[in-house]
Amino acid sequence: MSALLTRNIAWLAFFAAILGAWVWLYLMATRMGLDLIGRPSMPMDMDMSMGSGMDMGADTEMGSAMDMADTEMPGADDAAAPEGGAMSPEMDSMGSNEMPMDGMGSDDMDMSDDMPMDGSMEMDGMSMDGMSMDMSAMTRFAPVWGMWSVMMAAMMLPTMVPTLRTYETLMHSADGTRAGWVGVLLGYFAVWVAFAAGISGIQLALLSGGAIDMMGIPTSRWLAVGLLLAVGLFQFTRTKEICHGVCHSPMSYFLGHWRPDFAGGIRMGLGLGAFCAACCWGFMALGFVGGMMSLLWMGLATLFMVIEKLPDIGRVVTKPMGAVLIAGGVAVAIWPVLQI
Image 1: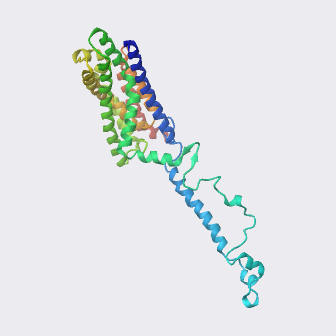
Image 2: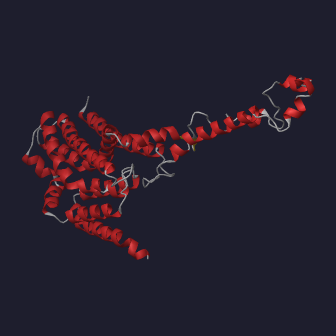
Image 3: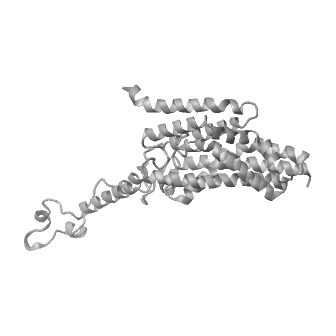
């Protein structure tokens, strides 16, 4: 297989993984009944009230109809039992516990065409049972970690394009290999999968403490204020400057830590991923402001992190973004006062 064909296959697989991650997130949000900003299109408890509630309502109506059938009509004793206790032929043919229900046909009693009797309900093609299952998964570590890992693939892999292109440049001038290229990618992503495990634990802890709801949306504006201010101020720190310098200029890192083979690529990818996680953790934490399943937040955060790594303008946007985030935190803090 030629080197050019191998290169094309590797890049196609890379972009296919990114696209697949975004499609998976979109389908998951749609299944859970969320809009583009991660807010439920109906109340979170609708699946309970419209699931078990439908069963109870149906059972009550059917039970009431049966009770009516078993209840004697007023004056039935006088009409049905003449002297000697003998029933009239008409009443005897009906049976002692039966009554005609004139005007109530089978169409009135048949509810199967209008309503499922198993407690589930379809609304706009979405199963309420399916939504309930997905919501409950947000309280368990494994599904939350899986969701965050896919989010890392969707959001962080696009930022790897300049780094992978830099490695390809060194493949021609040094002794790099395609296996080393793959190793860099895998090592980088392994760091973000580990990061996903940590932030999943934080999410479940915040959920348990009532600080966020099922979708990761804060229950108090002060959590959002604190995160916006913290991430905004971090943009001005020396730590951000150092970590961003490595992410923004991976060539210097490669030259100082060069390893040509697959194992060496993984080692360099782990190092690059560690610097990148230290640089971009704040934009992941901002998910607790907009909501974990907010496609709008994911898209904007991804766009900004890609811009941060561009050679020409990456260093220019860091501090202005910090100022924007700080202003956003102040605006959220004083918003209730402005509405008075």
